[in-house]
Length: 436
Length: 119
Image (cartoon, rainbow over all chains, first blue to last red; front, side):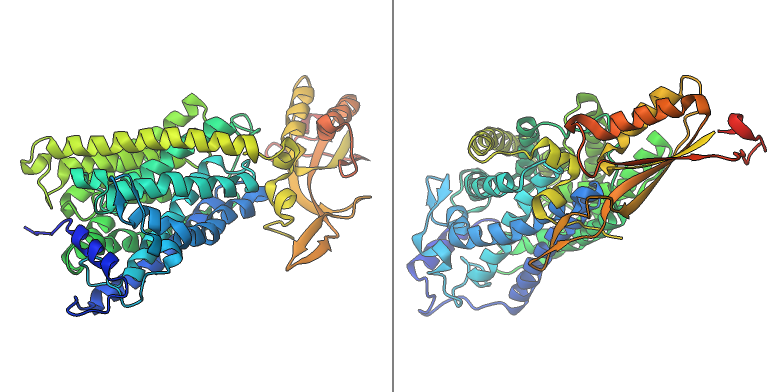
């Protein structure tokens, strides 16, 4: 059985703080393989953002294709800066009581030397900071799917800046940073089941409650403009997710990524495949047709579900996690038609529900660094995982309610009725996605 | 028999379809063909921005409805389209136009039926 060393970041971070230039001897050596993989992974996670733009962009009506894709692209611009300026400092700075990070030299990366290594890892701190930054970018962009076709662009920008700063950064600190209170308790989240998927899914639902349904929902037939884009996007997401999950190995395994990376890579592939197949079969049974959007949704549901578990479970249990992801997400998406809440592109149905299942499943099926339920570890880890899920749901719910209400009062969250009718592309951006 | 060609705002299509269905299902048959078209009337397109330049596109995107109607229902169909295509704004440039043409013959391919019943 693999033995992966978990934790042990604390001493490393303190070392980095005491010696930001990393110039004094003796120091750990840079590991070429790990560093190369981290650079590659960071680029792959960034590629998921245009992938998400295509995935979402294909599903909306043609009058809103540009604004929907722009939600993802503008997150690359805005959070891409926010992360460098303050986000990394809040998430991975020196822990203040386990609740937030703060290291002034991290502001604008001003005190991070290119030759400084990250903690006790053999990769440069800058590559770790960049890798984490891509996660910060994609997470608020996931939320946009729930409020597509009616959220104002101004309101979206204000919302993601506040949300990333006051929801994402604290959560990332709690779960991933050494000294973070959930991390110290032993809650496992390999690559972001709680921080990324539950947080964005729950916040998406809250935002839908604040903004309301689209004017044509549910009576109008709202059909996708181009599912070819959506399938292309799903493909890019799958590809990028190898960076997302297998790249996260570097943050977990010490001193270099290797075993954890290949394990995460394998479970990611396996879970996504199982989930795509299960969604297709469920749909085939349920409606009589195996749809392309169903397969694409299954892929994403499986990838979401395996995210917190990727480096903690065996490939066999990854099949179960992926299949379960599709089962629960499929159910959630079907139930949406009953409760009539217009989570337009199923951000909660897939990321919220899939993330919760994955986080709990991690406690059931994990074998490293601790034994979960099926490996004789009892219910201890399941309990910890439930704590992680509960805390994330509650925090994301309350904070998004507050932030969303503030933005609604001062900036506005929704476009006017005529803008919504004529389409956001032409009325807000002065462009159309398609001409003759 | 008349052939009605209506060019309307795409976002009013759903409302026009609903109105026509309500009107024509009383006695006539509700059948309809829709095409996505580009063109202009008094309003010459819309303002767009391309690489920083303001461009007034010569064409605006419209939906075109083609529908065959028996004589007794022509006025009702026109009224339904006008009311639904104008919408709540009370009428603006760009709301569209309706053309009514004499319809010489109508054949249902499946059965070979001709005339008013085939509509």
